[in-house]
Picture 1 (cartoon, helix red, strand yellow):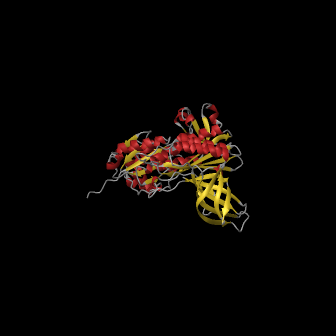
Picture 2 (tube, one colour):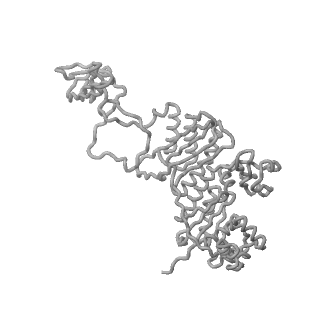
Picture 3 (cartoon, one colour):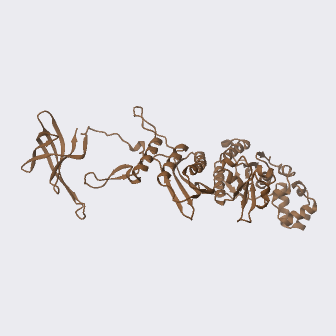
Length: 501
């Protein structure tokens, strides 16, 4: 078998600090924006978008020098937002290759993908590059894509390439790199000064230098630079294996106190979380909002609907109702949104099964009820492991799986109609057994009596209870009655607890 020719794709996003900030602030994308690093008043420009660079903004400018650009919006650098954006970029690249290397630096994001042998699955390299760039643009990031059989050749080409796709044919790396400036090699200052004195300005000129003479003057570093310029440098790919996490962070420009303003930020973060989950064919099972407050405190809330889903309007409404019922105690300075992934909910209904309400409507209704009656007073009733009547607890509501819902089989059973609260009855005993009773202004004569059944509990505490129960078949002048009669010896009264249909 012929070995496959190695093929790599370089995804390069320049001015990454600015792109990481603007992906969560769509309102600022149409204007010039500069990112400031450092502590005031010694802040310097570390990154800027294309509109700001077109006006003359460059890296290293001070805050005072930016006063001549009144239209440029200034934002402080956020390492947390850059980390979230870089994780999202690596996850997007991981959809196209299991081997992804993170070669990012402080100001740019660079991902190397091993796409050897993916033609049958993902199409030609050009189609793969278009699909990958489309997935990256969905994250709000603009990047360049270069595909080559040499890793370093792809990186050098991507550093000088605008936002588009380029493919370097195998064996033509030197010709493709010849016109590129020396800046794409990230030279050390002393080497850049040396090449400037020699008049070397492009990779093609560097590639033409004699190898032995270059090594004699610059050492082994000279040989490495010459190999990079000729596209002949070889190295192994070091794949990164980041943990899959759905998290988005955003540091607010000013403290926020109004819930409506916070919902606008949550909507932007939800868009990115849903897009990332959908790309992995997943849904959001729960969403946790962590709000950083003034004074160093945090306010955390978790919303978990009955079924996972990717409906943005549903999640935004649930978060709105939850935060409205549990507002943060101080102004908000940063927002972190994390989600737990789950499988997409698809329920196969039977042909004659009645249509059920939509789970989203149920979740919103339950959230509104909780905001009125309280968190611990809504849910589903769960019977406790005791014989005490009306003993149950409230558990969070959950939709059972279709396989867990089974129709009753076998012979038909008598239905029990519980009376809540139990209704009083006047009972006449004969030999300690009910002989007749008055219920709802009617007198019934007992024809058959089954019992008694005694139950008691909590003898060790203040909630002592004791019950004597009878199942009766009785008849009045016009109708018959099957019921459950109970006596509480501690209160010495009789009550009808249930009717049998």
